[in-house]
Amino acid sequence: MINYIKSALFYLLFSLPFAVYCQSASPIQWGQILPVQPDTTNAYGSQYGRLLQLKNGVWLAAYTISDNAGYQKDQTGGLRLEVALSHDHCRTWKKIALLKDPGRDLDNAQMIQLKDGSILLACRSVRWQESYILPVYKSNDLGKTWKRLSVIDQNEGKQGALGKPDKGIYEPHFYFLNDGRLSVMYANEKHVTQSPSYSQIISQKISPDQGKTWGAEIWVAHEPGHPDSRPGMPVWAKMKNNKYIVVYEICGPEDCKVYYKISKDGINWPGGLGSPIPDQLAAPYLLALTNGSLIVTSNNSNISISNDYGLNWKTVDKAWKKTTWPSLYEIRQNEIGAVNSLGSKKGRHVVSIRIGNFK
Image 1 (cartoon, helix red, strand yellow):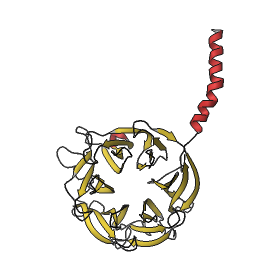
Image 2: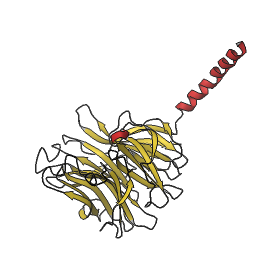
Image 3: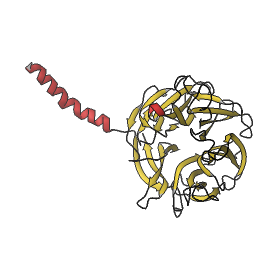
Image 4: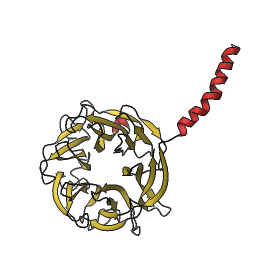
């Protein structure tokens, strides 16, 4: 017995410091915090920041702003989308454009650049429980001006007709397929009144002409017998092994935990609800690094890293104590940006970025 106690004490003395060291060591060292929204004079502030690096190295940011909390406070107003530009690797930003649809709320912006250099921006445009549209805007001058190009999906009804339960569409996210075609995923409540019923699923569409028109709906995440499960907020990317990965929250019985799926071609996805990512909760965002690593964050601020294409995940140091609709980007080699809607003492939110060095 005495020898056993001595052995146990020896193990604790020599293994504990090593364990603490391993736990505290993080591949990301987080540094300075910088505002992305260059003008913070509007009363509401900004949220849901999404970035895009252009082929010329310039960065664009799109985020949601409002002076009046949406069209429900002002029938001629609504949430709007602001676009800003950075020439210095996301350190400073200049506002260059404003997208608005009077009488409607614009939100959930996401951008992608086409081969010809033009830029597409998808978002949601809503009048709650009445009209839901996923429009696509196009810019031919690097984000300075925008014109509506197409509609990915929509659901229209009389005032209040699309509620109880809601039948909206939200959170579009673009990506390219292996053959160069543009594709998009989004959260979709339109099947809730069908049989079988699904409270929400993740849908996908493919464009044969770079965003001008959109093909048939593909179901990415749902599961028969689980009508109350709500997969949503999809973000997807191509991994270094040439497979595709999508991450998403599942609210409802799954309490908004984060899940993922992997596809060989980005079109055919495994059935069911997918596999969970530990320690992540609500509004996930995925970054596939050029070195092959995957990084995921979400609204609980945790950051998870996988070095084996999603088979295993390790939780590392947070960039933020509290996050709202976060996103992640590889700014330069070994440099990552974590975007957040940062609250202030005045109650106004400001989309901000925190720069981290990745080892």
